[in-house]
Length: 385
Image (tube, rainbow, N blue to C red):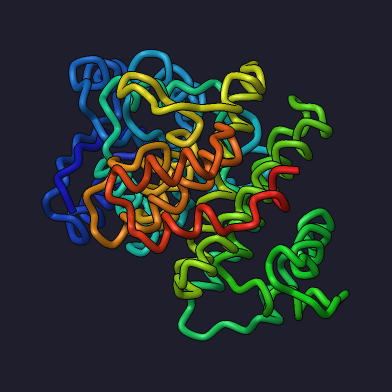
């Protein structure tokens, strides 16, 4: 882990010492500043512009943690903002959805600390410019990490998990269940025989795609009061069409199933940043034909990568989200063919380039001949009509 700097505010001196010991035991290289004094806290926040994490207790006599983090978001939006609380009810978390990036529940253990700090370190490793990171930290709309997604992730990451258990969790959300069944019956994804069983749908789609679908739908639910349902549905359908097209293109190019599922998930989760921008009043036209972005501007894909990394998604997925607008945006040999696939499909679906023009361009840039040939042969009409 690269060195990260954190400031912790808590009126309980004993708990501050426990936190400091627990963090240093797991991450001895972390620079930890602790304080129980609110004035000292503001001084640290304003003098340490490159802080990576601010962690505040919720219940304090001087000021509650939500108010502290809300003020942090305007004074120094660069660091990740985490709330230490014994109240993890949905009503508490939804009170200020744009203020809190992460929660550390009481009683915490070393595994909780490890998860939080690993996500902060991974987020720091992503190639965001300083100004972009400040824009992302200051977003006025930020989706709360859904508890159902946390439950699913813990199930999937356990040594032994049962698909029936996963199906039981997702079946608690009727909208998710309906979308999973719709995609599990989709000819675009190669399924011929229909199914009405959520257990079979989970088995067909696999956990990678299931997590992406669930995440995208839960983000939409987070903003259902601020964005009309018709716009939600439209943007989700655009993302699902993009994801299906990417997966089929990758399959025909000979990619293995793991990479097909990864590409599907990246394409679908591009929806996350678009919904957040829409919730902040951006027009749909502002990102329908999103071009290569400046290092000084947080695009919808950058927003998706930022949110997903905070929620513990794989760095590879986040890197692909940030690089898919440019053939030369990654020098990671493992990611290059995946990046090129996303770029090709985006150019056809969103920038409306003709297959002939795009093939010529990709040929000139040294893109894999298999991908170049497939540009001419692929059935684009099914996804563009």
